Image (cartoon, rainbow, N blue to C red; front, side):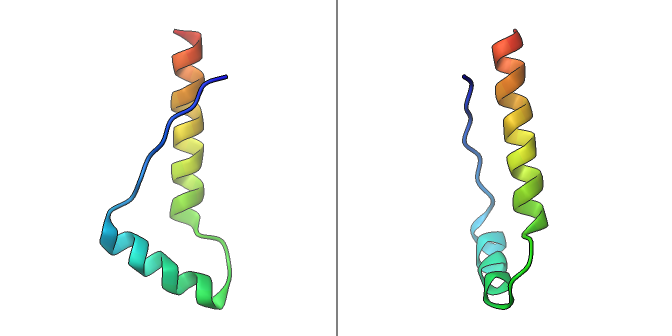
Length: 46
């Protein structure tokens, strides 16, 4: 198993928290999760 942790900046986090009030996908976080997964997989391969 491989893992990695990433974070966005504080301004972006605040903006996304408003998005949770109305619902819907937080696309930038979904992309960040996909990127982190790919990094973790690459670490396992190398």
